[in-house]
Image 1: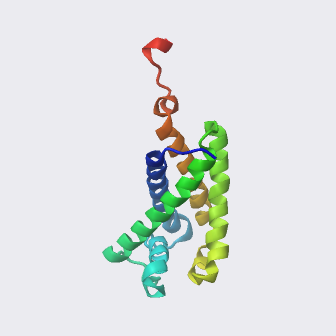
Image 2 (image 1 turned 120 degrees about the vertical axis):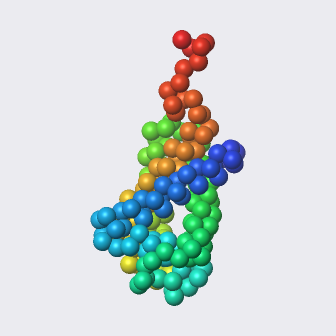
Image 3 (image 1 turned 180 degrees about the horizontal axis):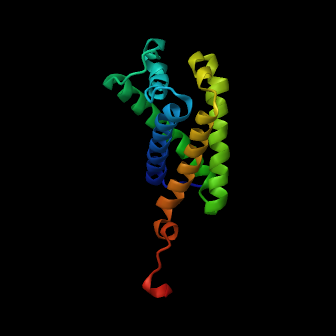
Length: 161
């Protein structure tokens, strides 16, 4: 199975987690007409209970910080799993695998975890699926990019010219 670069995997989780959160908070109001604060409230409800769910889906600092911390912890865990799987892959294959893993996470969260968190069922939509696929792609891309930064940016060295 081999080892991974833990620092790169953790940062990949943070990067992909932020990508996911931003996409959800932009796409929900843009495409579904909902509040940008609804996705963080659904995450925060895992810890704070269903009382934080919309309506009203407004900003509250404590709720948002709870959602952000929990989401980042889960994102790091998922990115570590992705790092173990894609560590020796080419970028193209890793991105494809990351997309599939993101879709698997979507189905686990919105179909499996609804047993514990029934409010997840209301987010079964293409926006959530796209955000999860983007998370998987982002985690794979960030991990490999952090492992091999010069190859991801197209830089050349003096010896390769």
